[in-house]
Image (cartoon, rainbow, N blue to C red):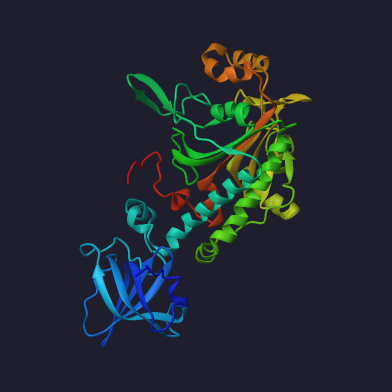
Length: 424
């Protein structure tokens, strides 16, 4: 007999024999009978147990064979009666939190310490369902736009962004690093496929113990060739965000409802403000090299009030604050053809136009006091012809955290890695 999922049970014919498999979500013991609520990957089903039949402890995996019976009070109007319950494992230990309650009243450390179990809670797992739907939308949108998915090394010989915020590892007796970004490789692959994207982990050894930073996170990267400038990149990013939003609505409507997610509307054109104007708008000194979190929040409020948009792109960040491969603004080399996209007052995306001429790279690297020979494997792509190109990277956890208004990014991260946490 084929398995019946809980979402399929309401469509069963009353009197039909059905076979369910899942976890004992809850046991409600009354005087004459017991209600067993079974949970599977699609939802909950109600099983009516009589005659003193034993029900295994909550979270035990079971198989239930019984009769589909109409009951307006049951989920979907159908419950299972006359069940034969077979435990598929030993009786489960009592979970660290009561997973049958509508909300988990547990501290964040408790949730994270017991993540393999606490992610089972319906209100918790929908957070990742939103992330998974977003990933689908990211991929689908870029596939339709002629992009090719790639996967690049996470062991690298040098730091992508330079600086000390890298994890050094022993790679067969010589030093290597965990990749901070697929940047070098995705640029090189523009020389092969023109348009590429990657979904994968990146690693930042930054000693930040904040609600918005992780040492490892999922980066959604894209890079495209034959562009005019960074605005072409921003237009592709706009379409990607719209695709992610559409996929959330199509693939995870239940997750949106249960999580209370505030899914944004992506405007046809994302409002843009230059960095120098952004500083003036938030009252920051004109020589400020970057935006502080309070500046980002103020700009988010401005974009919502002035443009009705949850998104705003800040372009023209100072070249001094951007990586060496960043293309300068043609009419004023102090500023860059790059941008940060803020989503509800928080930096979500970094993107822009890259250098593509070998001579430009030689000058940029020497200006940093470094030898271009140290980047020989990277630079060979440019020596053999590269088009004007650019790209962006979206932080998946930050995106999901903003959807559900999470106070801490760890709430939406399956197994966070940060300054203090390396398990589970």
